[in-house]
Amino acid sequence: MSKERFDIHQHLTDRIVAAIEAGAGPWQMPWHRGSGGRHPVNIASGNKYRGVNVLALWVEAQVTGYGSHVWGTYRQWAEKGASVRKGQKASYIVFYRQTEVEAGDDAENESKSRVFARAAPVFNAEQVDGSPQVTPAAPVEDLHDVDGFVARTGAKIVHGGNRACFVPKLDEIHMPRRELFTGSATSTPTEAYYSTLLHELTHWTALPHRCDRDLSGRFGTDSYAMEELVAELGAAFLCAELGIAVEPRADHAQYLAHWLNVLKADKRAIFTAASKAGEALSFLQSERPAIASPLSS
Image 1 (cartoon, helix red, strand yellow):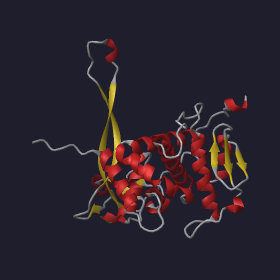
Image 2 (tube, one colour; image 1 turned 90 degrees about the vertical axis):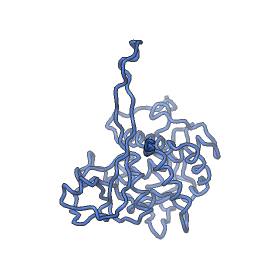
Image 3 (cartoon, one colour; image 1 turned 180 degrees about the horizontal axis):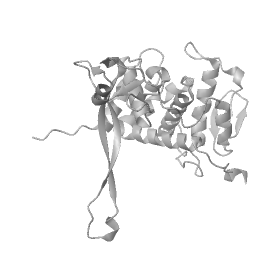
Image 4 (cartoon, one colour; image 1 turned 135 degrees about the vertical axis):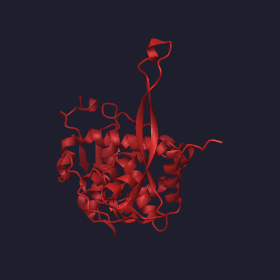
């Protein structure tokens, strides 16, 4: 009897659902707490993990209580002179491998290829003995000036009122004035302001002439929940890139049931959301001429 293939999509989705359902106290999504919002890095290269692997390792850090943001495979740790302690349980990341499909009778099939997801077991620095210090690779861009980063995107930010939202018809992000953000026991008002702004900035990328995501859903629909997941992950990824602690918005708890429904119904939903969030982040980080919105013409 053949051994059943490990399903990385189902595994990660199950871990996220379990983390949400087991949450105690004031509810937060798992990526708000993993490793204090620090970007996971690889021990061998010093590079930051990307896309859904950031989320996967944040979830593992939350569930297991790891405080380090450094990860690596068994072999990578060994090559650094460290050893994974006996009995330690691996966490999993995903990588994609493209494989050419055998050419068929139809010439159109000759250049087709398929992409397969593969799981790789990794261990946290807290699971090994003799763990060396790691120096993360220098970022591609210096993004410490968050205001400058937001300004470079060309997004129109309108301050006023008491609600943060993106208004597609106007192509505007509406934000309360900065002084109205009070922060919380775990974040400063500045962190609360910027994490909220980056959430709305991710929504801003959804219009057709940017990343072209579906904004037609209304509250309570699966498409609405998916876009909120994309915005949540986009804000989390941006906060990690820019060195800002992640502060969940107060109104996110009401989306919980809809997020869980989507995650339970589709094991690939979180991968899709992370992929879309990654596309939004790449769009926002790209060096490009300002693109005028069709709404302003």
